[in-house]
Length: 298
Image (cartoon, rainbow, N blue to C red):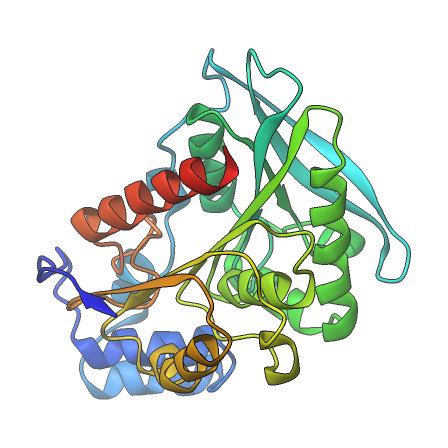
C-alpha cells in the first residue's frame, strides 16, 4: 500500500472526532440523537454540522448535465430475482459508437444522489459509457436528502440489493453501444459492491476501483480475476481495519491489485459536497482511476 502526501487542513474548523462520529452515524453504528449529543458535548451545534459535515450538493457539479459533449438520460433494466425492474442514470459520450468501454458507478448507502450522477458524467467526458443504478428505485428513488435515503436503503433486503447490482452490470455489459469490457467504481457502500462484483462475477467485471470499500465475503474472494485499484483514506479506521486480511487473501490467489492510502484524509474524501473532501488527494485518486480504466478496458 502506497502512502500519499499529506492533505491540507479542511477549511471548516471541525475536530477529527466529529468526522469519526459522522462516519459512525452514516453507517448506522450510532443514531442521530447520539451523534448530535456527542457534537454538543464538544461545543458543535447542529448548524455547524449542516454547514460542514452534511453534504451540500450544489458544490458537487463538475460536469453539467447540459454539457455538449455528453448525453445523459435514465434507463431501466430487468432485475428478476431482486426488485423486478431497476433504474439508473445512463451517460454516454455524445459521439459514442459501438464497442465503447463502460463503467458501472455505484453510489454510497443512500441512493443515487447528485454527487454520484456527476461522477458518471465525469466518466462520460473521459470517453466511457457510465451507468449509475439507483438501488432506491423500487421505493420511489433517491428522496432528495441523504438521511432519508440512508433510512430507505436500510429497509432493503441485502441479498436482493447485491443481485440488483449484478443485473445492472449485466445490462451495461450487454448494452448495444458497449464493448465486452466492463469496469466498476464505487464509493463507501459502493466500494463494497465493487469488491463484491469483482469476486462474485469474475466473468463480468474486467477492472474494479473500490473507494474506501470493505471486501467481498471471504468465500468469493478466491474467484477474483479482474485487476483492482483500491483507494483508501488514512483516517478511515473502520474500512482500513479490513484491509490486512483482504490483502493477504489477494496475495494468496495472485491477484493483480494496486492499493493506495491517502494521508490525513477521511472516509469520503472524494465526495466534493462535504468538508471531508480533499481536493488534491481526490484529483490524484480520480486521475489514477481513469488511467486504470483506460488501460484495462481499452
